[in-house]
Length: 132
Image (tube, rainbow, N blue to C red; front, side, top):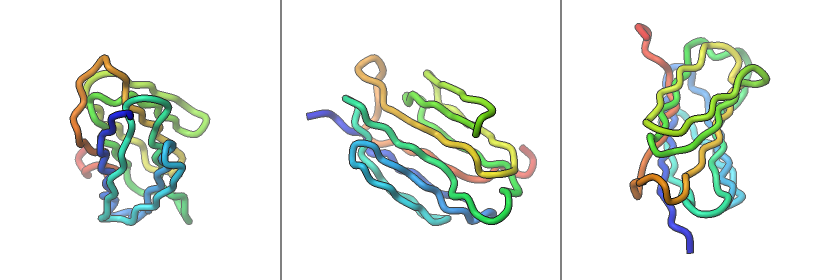
């Protein structure tokens, strides 16, 4: 049996009030999180498991920068629709995404045995502060 990390995904988009979509691969399940809400998902550390996170598209663009707070132990790929892909391995990362269409996606995995991982961690999606 593979170990799992409880990942709490928080939608703190209080100004934009967009929903966040999460696809959990091993459970073959999709979750939509309303603003001000969160959900906990067990991300397996062994095998092919990942969380795929994006902001729900809706009428109009996002008016403020969007911010992703990602655990330090996580491996991920970040893509901004056809423009850039960022791959991370290492310390906790804060990604700031410019205002505009919600056209980004985050695919997060738990690495195997090489790094220590907590039993519980979080990812937060919110707006950047006005002063950066």
